[in-house]
Amino acid sequence: MSSLTIRLDSKLGSELERLATLRHQSKSEVARQLLRSGMARETLRLLHEELEPQARAMGWLTEEDILRDVS
Image 1 (spheres, helix red, strand yellow):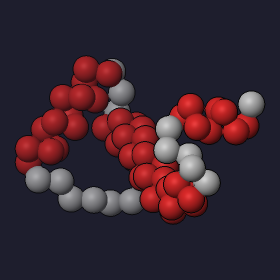
Image 2 (cartoon, rainbow, N blue to C red):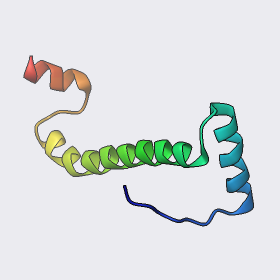
Image 3 (spheres, rainbow, N blue to C red):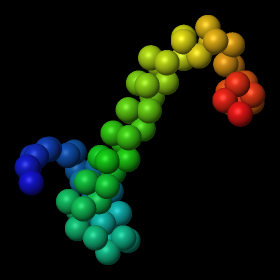
Image 4 (cartoon, rainbow, N blue to C red):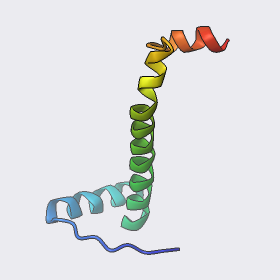
């Protein structure tokens, strides 16, 4: 496992501490979970940005368009 050291301003540090307390988890575990979910969202955003022009070129503007062509 690798480690990462970050500096948080006092407000963010307090919010992390409060969330960790509410979840009954360590600050590190909460930070790992938030980092995982943030990275997943960012990966999806980047994929969408990359693939959207290709989808539009195929006439896929809605989910119904996609389902029509793949069903």
